[in-house]
Length: 232
Image (cartoon, rainbow, N blue to C red):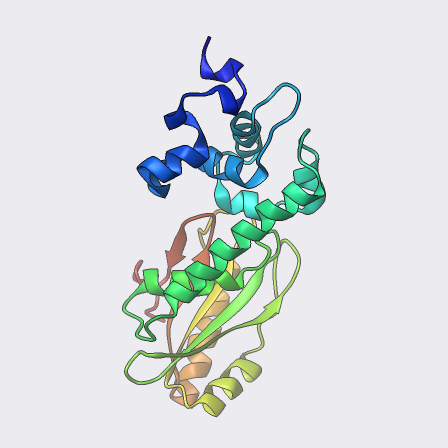
């Protein structure tokens, strides 16, 4: 009889998620096995691991998409009650906060990947568009990151007057713009290019350089600077 037909307690020791972690380390576990540890048990027809695989299948095996599910959406899965759903949400939120903490260990910004990592935790709900700004000093050390506005699924309002006033108050010599595309595709639109050009022109008047505009998609991003598009 295969493991798929047995309860987890009947599996070989190395195949049980908890024992597997103890014996082989946390990196040996699949995402489904890690979630299975969180939920502890499955339902009448699925083991905890099978149920976890089913949940992951529902979001295309994408942990970011999983983290965006609501309590009710998680509880749509048979065998996932409120307590289990909250456990999953809490674990994913901790992972997100750890990523943010790691990104902020150093204030030096070396490139677009650093910018993407620092912006990502501020996109609280990827189904909405968020407009972000990073303020930097002359040595390209980050002074602050903030979400200046958020909106619906199509666009947000970004007011240059407010953003450059904040830059002056912080003593920033340059800024980076950022926003996410709820579609998950970070390819810039013509409106994105027009907005970037507008900010670059305003920054030149104030002697505050706009050095990049990073558009965030699902686990990928588009950097205007990397693509040679900051030559306005």
